[in-house]
Image (cartoon, rainbow, N blue to C red; front, side, top):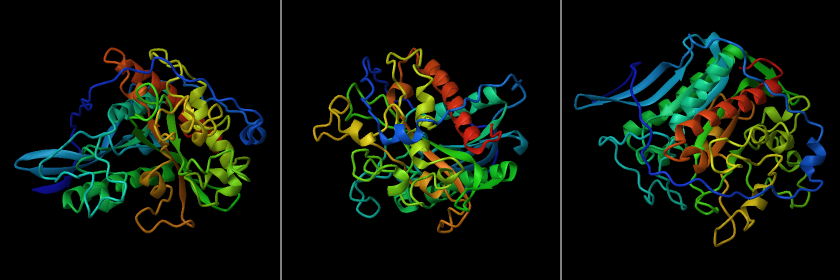
Amino acid sequence: SECVEASPTVPTKAPTNNPTKSPTSSPTKSPTVATCTDTICGNDIANTREPLQCDPSDLSLTILNNFEYTDGGVTDSLVKLLGPSDPALAAALVIAVPHGGSLKPDYIDDRTENDPTYCPSGGCRILADSYTKPIAKTLANKFIQNYCKVPYLIINELHRSKMDANREIGEAAFGNAIAESAWTKFHEYINEAQSSIQTEFGTVTNTASIEGVRGLVFDVHGYAGTDWHNDGSDFIQWGYRLSKDSLDQSAENNCPIDITSSSTRGSFTHARQMPGESLECLVRGPKSLGQRFNEQLPLSLDSSETCGRGLPSLDYQDPKAVASDPTYCADNDGVCSYYSGGYDVKVHERMDWDNDPTFSGIHMNTVQAELPRCIRFATDETRNAVHEEFADKLSIALCSFTTDLFESDTC
């Protein structure tokens, strides 16, 4: 058996989990009066980068690197890096899919939820984030269609029960050498894509003398949300490595979050100190990713008019308040889960991710998106169409965000 890197075209398939119904009713916006965000970010204007009139017919995702393993004469593709055939055709976007794989090879032992050696006290996660892989591919293709630019896409093809690419290597691979190699390639491929974007789009130094790449790493996840009402929450949970407590608007002296959050905290260390920007407004103001996507709702083919609304966003500013509100949360303990961002967005905010990343290194802004079931599963009849519409709207939100932030053509 051997591990190699190659570039064949390997067919993929979506996970086959049974879908559940979309929520049939959704809560309305929480009342907000003179919040910190309203006061500080009220004059912000979110510019929209509309789709271009261009011809994308000659553009497509190309396999740039492909980590394979051969066992018993059968070769499996474990991790892929896709992107533009020419770096000059790139968008300044890295899309990572750590939990969308479905491959369960016998040559990698199963990870278990309560392994005494590798699992933390809260246990290990082994369930896949269903449909995140086809959604990410659709998103990349919508970028091509709308802007004639090709993002980079990194896919872990292994099922999460075999390797978790969004954890440190011990918990990720359970000491299995093949899984460890796949984990390493996943993160090397992200860094390879980041480096290509740095070469093509350059860097900019912010007001705190922090140098950052003109671009964004977008880490795609999905959550069941079984502790929320209606078979799972409608919210897209946007994660910036800021906890519910960090975003708690009722906390004393917590306005804005720039004050209570140290300059190295969160995944927007570079963006938050760009001229005219603040962490408060980038995370939940009019120009935030959550609010940009909110402005494009509803998804016309989904049964819920508010499926995909952002948490946090200008409309839903306080994840802790929402997650503690029985209108939204069905958990018996009264507090629902909010996912603030994991390993990927933490380590890849620094370009020297594999060398004990430091505050002084070159940065690249990162964000995690936890997608709800109403988007990922929809219904058997509407799933593909919902994915298409969602990806189309999200491509506009992401392109508009980076174009506004860097005041340059990033897509």
